[in-house]
Length: 329
Image 1 (cartoon, rainbow, N blue to C red):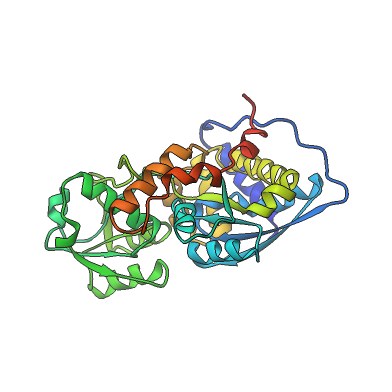
Image 2 (image 1 turned 120 degrees about the vertical axis):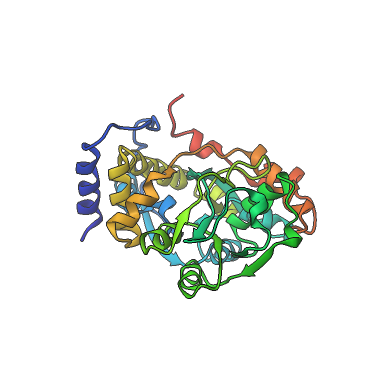
């Protein structure tokens, strides 16, 4: 099924419920001649669903987009650092991580969305307060974006992370669901769509009394779009048109939660009911600031994740002006 048909279906669903806020865009930029190619690395997670359709919208603007699929943010970060791709969907902490590793070729362009983040708790297990974490088997992916959010939140709440019974899980999100199926864990700190999958399978519930997206240091940002420094310097107008196209699709699929759910299903291959559950807690928007990323970097250094505090260096690794140039003010 073509992207055009999938997006048409999402737009039809948008009429079923009231619209939400849209990003006001400038008029479409003039087409580049000759066309410019951009290689874009993506992880097929719900919060970058606008990439499904962005290539089609960018083509009339003189930008040929080649999408390359990756499984993990870390792989996209490595590909950006090596220059094998020019644009990528990365985690909210990937720029500070790269800078701390003396990888200086990745530039953050914009955020992609926010969501409340709640522990996914196995049915029959009680978790009412952060203190209830003690004695529970807590599954998490060490060094992941959600690990940063969780560690910062519980630290601010006075919880001793070192006293928790942490079960480290690698290999993507599906192993969290499988561990819960086996009864190996009591809860997990994960990401969509695997949170909703565990709930839809009747394994767990979402403990909405506890939200680890609200820490002062990390916040609720789900990820960002980054580019190589070379692309920012030499393909700036192509990047500008790609972002315009991305935001146009974002506006369309964000017209309602039904439309967003349909777009997430089309992008990720999730069952419709799981995709709708994911959409209900997610907002696609661009609120990421350099100040927030600097706060993250300071906290990651304090937690011992980053060997050095790179917060003072970060302004030179962000260029929000490309995004700002396509948004009406």
